[in-house]
Amino acid sequence: MSPHYFFPPARAYPLNRCLFRLKSDAAFRERYLADREAAMEECGLDEASRTALRAFARGDLVGLGAHPYLVFMAALRLRMEQGPEAFEYF
Image (cartoon, rainbow, N blue to C red; front, side, top):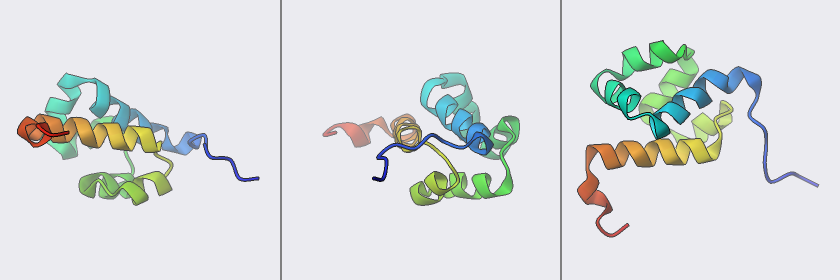
């Protein structure tokens, strides 16, 4: 039987922490939007994580160990920050 939930590997902690901060921390989100390279450096992300996060490639992020919920919520919060009018019919 295959589990429907996986626990992210420990090596993915910096990536998941960054996604959590994008989802939950308005000040970090603002810094990320102003200079995402500096924000990713602040989180200590490796190059593979940075590449996936630059494109917000869901499959790549999850493949690197990102929790799917954090990927979804971080992307949603960033989209809301950049253009709340896009969620008029959400």
